[in-house]
Image (tube, rainbow, N blue to C red; front, side, top):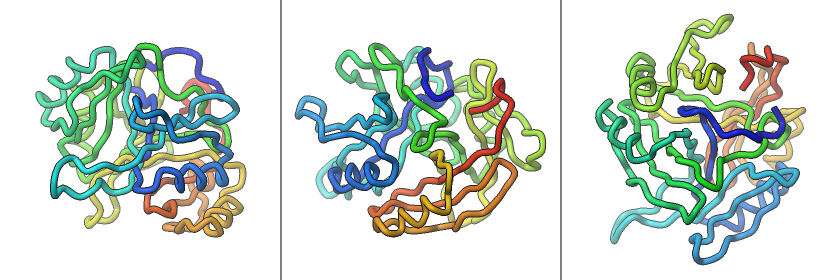
Length: 264
């Protein structure tokens, strides 16, 4: 699914963005690593950068800002946004299902309406009600998102929450014991698994596609990134887990072919 031309189904991951202390450094890094194009945006958007790949929107990058006096900047991290038809109704559903709202719903010009929340296990995510902007316009191509994964301390609690709050349904994934697919609009849009390290909090992990994880990891290291897990083979393909030079964690994946009806 290289180009995305239709609106995202409710519950499906539709956008990602990165919060970092040094926005320009991040723009330079991801341009070198993935070939993204982007620049610091105008003041009316808070400088927010919409990065493109092959002329299609692929991700956002923005500068971290403290939420109040004496409050530290948020740590560098990628945020996954889930699609919703009604951000205000989603807020109520999220709190009703045991989640918490970290940033209340707000309009983003005529582009859409957004908010940020945490699920009952602590994983932070955003949700997006599209208007003029539906979200990522490319997926599955090298340098774009190929998979979204929820790594959680309690899969049962997380599954119940996302189903009730955002119509994102979990189901056992065939051939991957202990791992669940996440389904929206009748198709697989991501995965969910147990955290294997008790000292790691629940979080969403973004996977970017690459034709050669080993070469991409070598390039990332030359650009100042950190290798968390060196490239290894697993059921979905060859992958690695890394951090960018400012500490934001993400994964790289050269996926094996999947059924087109269930591929992310």
